[in-house]
Length: 199
Image (cartoon, rainbow, N blue to C red; front, side):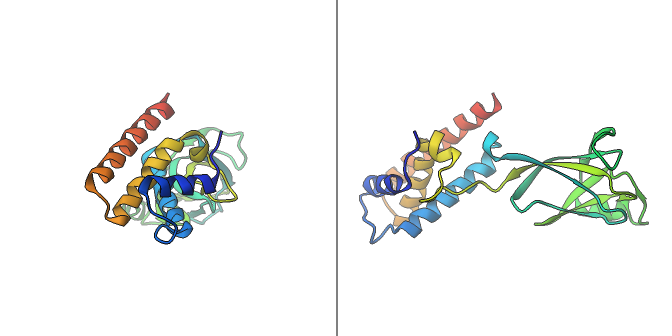
């Protein structure tokens, strides 16, 4: 059973023995978000995996990423403009490789990709038609808030709490033994969670 957001905030204040005058809802909310983002960066877990299908634009070397995109897991291109053609995994490279590889502006079925900026991917060679593409990616994890429960708040409450308490003790400049205790428990929880997600 998922813990309510208000009960979670109360737990944090009870464990740290600090009231809402010091650990406000906003501050604890930031600790929660920091921990969620840290976990998403450390563990490729089921709830953050997603895919999107799209098409390249002929003679355009950029592909716009979805709004909830965080990290690419893989990029597949189809040999046709629909998803009926042969599927090929593209190879990830650095942007400098893409520039050097495609210095002459060659067109064709893309083979390589690189992160260009936070909202687009650059490919080479430049697509010569609107090939279908599938982006497998990790989303920005949803936030545990007063109006939204998450996979972590429902199934990994202990790990989330240990991560938030680590943030809280660092913020409070609390006793190092308490910080180290929760940091150790959090790290162990992340490792166990990663093993669980790998099957």
